[in-house]
Amino acid sequence: SQLIDNVMTKENLVTAKGYGDCVCFIGEDGVNLVVSSTDQGLSETDIAKIVEIVREETGLSADQIKIIEAKP
Image (tube, rainbow, N blue to C red):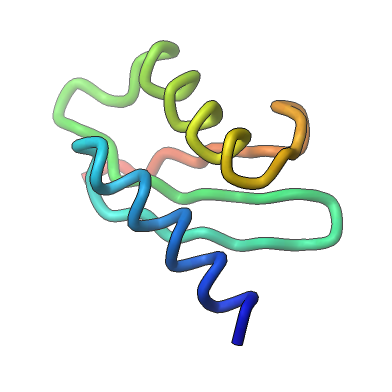
């Protein structure tokens, strides 16, 4: 389905930028991404980059995109 393709696209875009595993949940209110962090954790710069990737692909505003860091 198109929704599954959209989710997989977001996940693949994030992992292609060098971040760990990513799981994307698309809801009516926006997008939640669970991203595996590095040993040092995700910096604010990392989070901003991930939000920008998703924003460019979805047209959503930054406040509709939530990044959840999954600790190793």
